[in-house]
Image 1 (cartoon, rainbow, N blue to C red):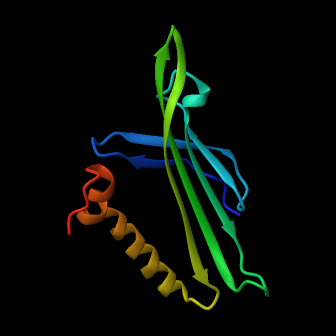
Image 2 (cartoon, one colour):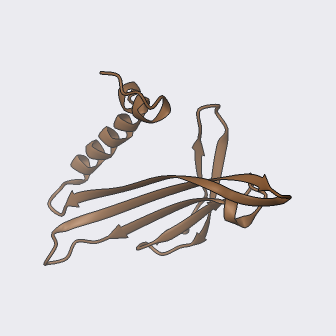
Length: 128
């Protein structure tokens, strides 16, 4: 198994957010971005998981969760006042070829980059 590496994601500015491996287990890995917050509760967290197919469930599952906490100072104390969260699961039939999985992953990437799909989140006003 390869060693875990940092995961760098750019936002819209673009500013890179570097998620460092903290807990690494294929079933549930945790990566943290520790440079921006005032408190550890404000660390951005990326969780990645993988569950292999079984005889009773012939699908592989990939899970992703991204938590972005937002801090504010209340009565001189820094607290997390809200968290934006993305939680997604990809289900891949065990019979898919590597090429089919790559094509599917690319479709998902392009789905998230699509302007109509981004409008659902960025402007809270879906455009058709």
